[in-house]
Amino acid sequence: MYGEPHFLLAGDSALVVEFGDEISEEVNRRVHALAYALEKNPLPGFGEAVPTYRSLLVHYDPLRLSCDEARALVTDLLQKCEEIPLPEPEVIGVPVVYGGEFGPDIEFVAEHNGLSVEEVIRLHSGATYTVYMLGFSPGFTYLGELPEALVTPRLPTPRKLVPAGSVGIAGAQTGIYPIATPGGWRLIGRTPLKLFDLNCDLPVLLRPGDRIRFAPISEGEYWARLKKEENGGS
Amino acid sequence: MVVLEVLEGGMLTTVQGLGRYGYERYGVPVAGAMDPFAVQVANALVGNALSEAALEITIVGPTLRATESCLIAVTGADLSFRLNGRPLPSWMAVFVRGGWLIEFDKRKRGCRAYLAVAGGIDVPVVMRSRSTYLRGGFGGFEGRALRAGDIIPISQPAFHLPSLAGRDFPADLIPEYSDAPEVHVILGPQDDYFTEEGIVTFLSSEYKVSPTSDRMGYRLQGPEIAHKERADIISDGIVLGSVQVPADRQPIVMMADHQTTGGYPKIATVISADIPLLTQCLPGSSVIKFKATAVEEAQARYREMMEAVEEFKEKTAPTGVSGDPTLATREKGERYHRVVVENLVALIEEVRATKVSVKGTEIPV
Image (cartoon, rainbow over all chains, first blue to last red):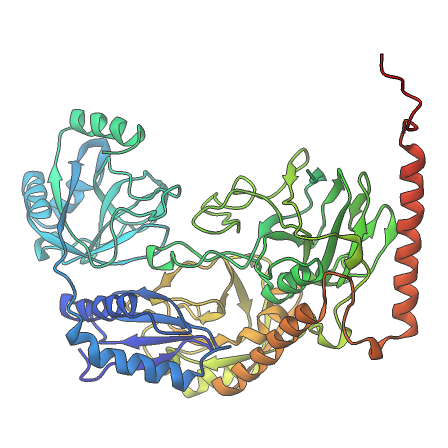
């Protein structure tokens, strides 16, 4: 983590506030703290803020603010960040059916790490993860930290279509595909939860900064829950 | 209600406004018009809010028929806009009678034209926007490009229309679209990932817009831009105009449909004022040169550009008085005259064709 955050230029209407050059909970927490402070104290002339692993992209209106003014406002807010504590997030449970057709790569992940499939499930569902960021496609969640014993490289060639709800591993990351897209992560399971719903004002179930835990479910429970989700959610 | 009937969809015609804001943090791309300036001027010409949804027309235009009278304006690329067979200028508000055909012909300049209709295009709002996001299949008209048989509803305009017909956007304020533009950039946010030589190469070479370029990104082909070491970063946020350079050392400029985050280092960002020049470049043929500029200068240019649109919008009252009357020209007067005469002739024809009952001749039983 940097001693002082770095300000980077992203063109004439956005700034990047970078807190470090590593994926860590500590750095990511500072990103979300600034995003939260901006949400609670909207600054005049500022637009949306996009949190990622280690930086916050802040849009501002160049018709209202110069770059220096925008930077000064964010600097002030950074100092106030400690007075606006990030609320402790609730832990959201995400049911997952592991293995089989739902997680075709779980055997590979097990073999690669010298584990049994049961151990993979136990380790993956035993950890609490932070939603570091959303990106890649609408609602795609990047989660950390993955237990070290589960670290597995991506597929050499991405799949043309990964089903919605698939839970995957790529290197030291784990994540969930909210909609069917191409993808190269090793798939270990699938959740019946509807993670992206464009008809909702808040279209995502999991937001940046949220904490989640995976709960293993049976195939029967998966189909029952999926039906419930399709009929308008829980 | 006015609707536009789509007789031919054209190459890629989509409903686009200024994009979808507030959802980037959830991974939802902004989308919206590739040329934000042209769509705003089109809206200003027909008396709409600047961010209203319009049609973005790509290279080969559609054929449309308005079912009832409406006011339209075409801006952006010159795709030989025609109304009922007659060529008409772009960057001008034009009155369309019910049944008339809106057509396009040869591409003369630029790549994307915008057709705004007074009242705006009335498609459902998805996540606070009417803009189409093609890859996600949502927004706009059923989340897709228009095709023959589609019926596009138009909202009721706020005021009487014919009064606005004939007004045009000052020619000296129209961007000079070119097939070989100089595009200004601000270095960063990851220019420190590149060698000094790499940055010099980027700023001194010509880059061709590859044929695989689309609304998501413009892939460029030219001299290789050298990284210092790594060609990947810990994924961070992307903005419109970000210039990514992946391991193959060929730059990609992120456009309207760009993903919200990415893991390639970004050498520079195209300035807001030059985004229109870039989006009007034709994939497969245009050639770009990048030039570095300071953020203050970029903002001053953007401010100047947008103030001109605001001023144009304010100066034009719905009563039809357009611009500064002391700046009238003979050419403009002739154009106004022609439009008025055409509309009058059409009105007479319409009245003649309408059956009317004379008052008093109908005797109640």
